Length: 126
Length: 108
Image (cartoon, rainbow over all chains, first blue to last red; front, top):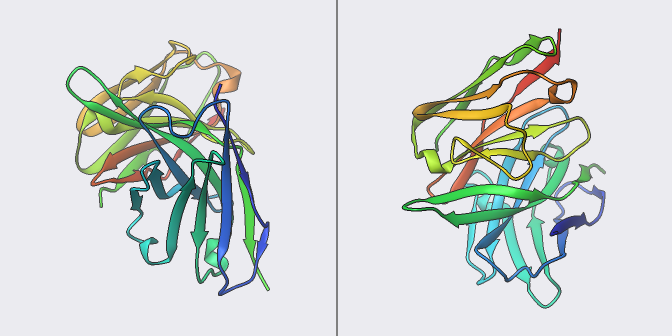
C-alpha cells in the first residue's frame, strides 16, 4: 500500500528557509485523484494545514501562510516538497505529509486525508 | 475561514462507556467535506470518518459519525482501551482545510 516518508533538516536557523521532501512509495504520485498535502503540529498543540499540490502543479495554500509557502512536485522522483521561508520559532513543529483524496460519490465529492507520513520534527533555533 | 470548535476539550470516561464528541462549525459545512481523525501520542493522525458518516477502511463499527450543517458528532459506542487518544474534526472549503482544536479522550 502507499506509504509516505518525510525528510529534511531537523534544525533551521531563524529567518532561513525550511525545506522538506515527502517521498511516496508503493504507488505513483500521479495516479488517481489525489492532492498531496503538508500539515504541521507544534508540540502539544493541534493540527494546522499548510497547503497542497496536485500532480498538474496546481496548488492551494493556507491563507495565513501563503506568503511564505511554496509546494512543488517532482513526479519523476515520486516526491513533493515544502519550502517555508523566513522561519521563526513559531514554525517549530512536527511536519506531516499526507495523501489528500478527492473522491467522487454519487453526487458529491469527498475530501479527506487517508494516508499520512510518520512526521518529522523541525526546530527553528540559532 | 470556517472555524471548527470541538467540545469538550477533555472527556474522561471508562472502557465500555459511550463517548460523544462534538464539532461545531462557524458556518455551514457540506457533509461530504467533514472528516474525523484519531491521533495517539507520537503518531500521525489516522482517518476514522469521512463524509461526516462514512467509516474509513479498517475502522471498527463502534465508531460512527453524524450531523449536518454546522453540528457534527463522533460517537464511540463502547470504548476500548486503544480508543483513548485525541480526536480532531476537519473540514474542507474554499480550497482549504481547517481542523478543530481537538478533544482529548482520557481514561477515567
